[in-house]
Length: 370
Image 1 (tube, rainbow, N blue to C red):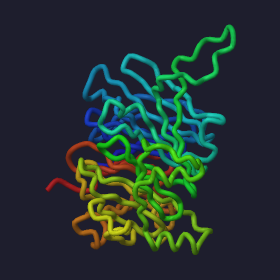
Image 2: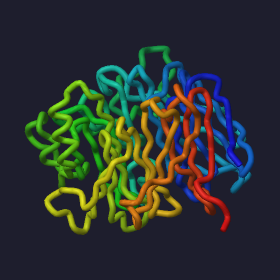
Image 3: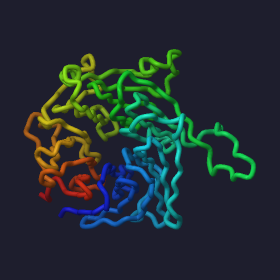
Image 4: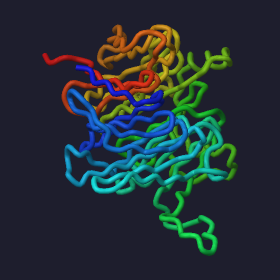
């Protein structure tokens, strides 16, 4: 049974929580707010609503989260980016009100649309301390949300001191606008960063910065992965809107990396890099793929969406074992609607996908009980 929820405005971002204690939570980013939904088999309800005041462009879940279904003293924490390039840390407890902590604004933050973000502390105690953001301004920023030193300007006489120190940022500059970032599921230093030209950088953000700040990506990038046809197409067709999306497979070894670029998807085997070329590629959408997601509960499954309304709101689900077979096609809504964002739900059992279509959030199963 599909679950449908009307957000009230156009839904721009949906992200499912992958933490075991909060696998039934969904974050929904709209035209001016972030809603957190508690999902059941047949329904969903709002447990938090954060009014940001600008369109949401990216959301990431912290590991400091528990669901009302798993704990009476539940709490949630997540980060969000607004269309005004500002960043926000959002939190709420069972007994408290919604709290919004803005950071990264002004000269210290991004100067272009923030396209993606991820917490990147691995499984360590720092899992909720660092959040990475990528932007059209060609910069990867890793924010320390709990800095040991407060670098902010002292408050003026009579003004109340800030509730917490402002996060500090470690900046790595890349040659082209950045579209996607994904943290390694278990280590605390490795990020996958995708740009708009068909390149993916495996970046060690904890490495020493380069003396030449303009080329700092060269010093931090361990491996560069290329999808040759996507790279060639992007160079030949500058008018094409590229929205590269990259992700690590959601298993402890994280041995596979997947990405969607243009009309194609590509998979890399990190144990056999073969010069950075993918070990398999395939066509996702002729009109261009938009987002790539691995299933966290069944790691062999991945899905690709398109932002083109040519065929309506459609998601293709692939199986790595039969990667050259035709994908399973899920037609969610007719034209002119399209999938603006989607994610796999991390609940156990038959995998479900949550998709943002127009003003609605739609959750559906990708299989049936055998």
